[in-house]
Length: 96
Image 1 (tube, rainbow, N blue to C red):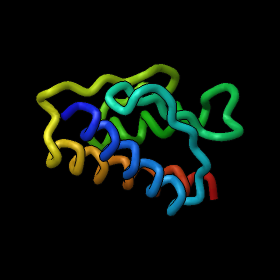
Image 2 (image 1 turned 30 degrees about the vertical axis):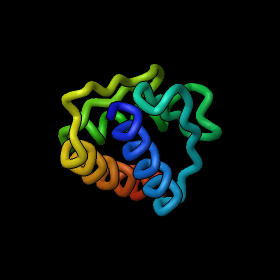
Image 3 (image 1 turned 60 degrees about the vertical axis):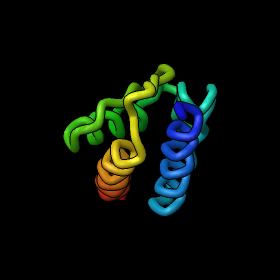
Image 4 (image 1 turned 180 degrees about the horizontal axis):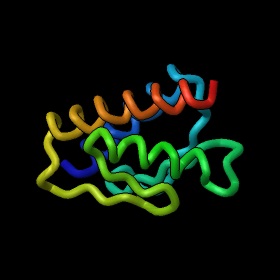
């Protein structure tokens, strides 16, 4: 279950990043995802993205693996992805 939820999150983040013009890398097992932006050695984009996601209700870490739990259900992941999509859009608007 945790692997499936992690993969759902990972797939959604990859689609959103591409749609908003960002290159990202994801590592770690799906249930412990880590998202890094390409060409972001100081994690400035990652930090900005995580701050924007937090403003939209999702707590992510810009420099460390995150942890899903068995309590996460598809609707939880979908709500998180709604917030991250808005965060990617806001980050793209700031980037110009």
